[in-house]
Image 1 (cartoon, rainbow, N blue to C red):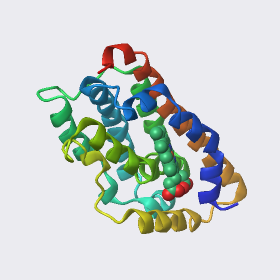
Image 2 (image 1 turned 60 degrees about the horizontal axis):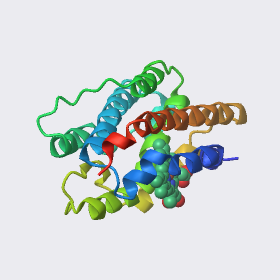
Image 3 (image 1 turned 90 degrees about the vertical axis):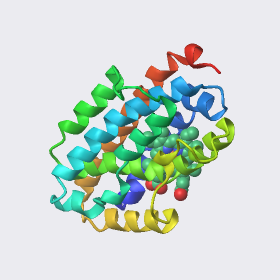
Image 4 (image 1 turned 30 degrees about the vertical axis):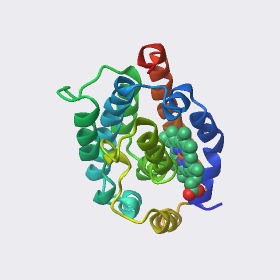
Length: 207
Ligand code: HEM
């Protein structure tokens, strides 16, 4: 099986679970206030800082080089959004889920494992993430403000197709594809843990 199909199929159950996580469903139903969304962004900030640092450091690894693209980087967009959602805030958070995610990223030494994390976040942001941005815009009446995170400078559909082709051009053998799938499951699990952590505060976030 191609790497792109293996990553998608290997994370399908985890994807369904993420879509049903209470924090996300409540957020997209318009029932989470600005402090809840800011707390989500603060965790994403930890994750993307670590992801983007790890990817940049390993961009000459052949697997990482295949997907490396500074145009995807989200850290500056997250900071801009935090200025909107939590003005005057310090952009720092105590989060064991975000720290565990960061530690996993920092410890990766095998390029395709890092690609599995790259795929989980950026292809998700370019897929369901695009719908999320539109829903948040509507639910909060934002007129596009505070949503830089969802705003990518490329045409999404052709980019995703080309991304999958670059995954498949990496030339991983079956054993390596299996190891990459193991890591994509880990990546989804780390995202789920962030949502679970946020769900604990849903009563406080209610709007
Ligand atoms: C409410 C939450 C979500 C919705 C509604 C959603 C929806 C979708 C949809 C419709 C697609 C398919 C798009 C396409 O084929 O072009 C997709 C793909 C994807 N999503 Fe999500 N998603 C959600 C949450 C997440 C989360 C939390 C993650 C991971 C952190 C994620 C990661 C991905 C990835 C990696 C893909 C690409 C699959 C592939 O084509 O290989 N999604 N999502």
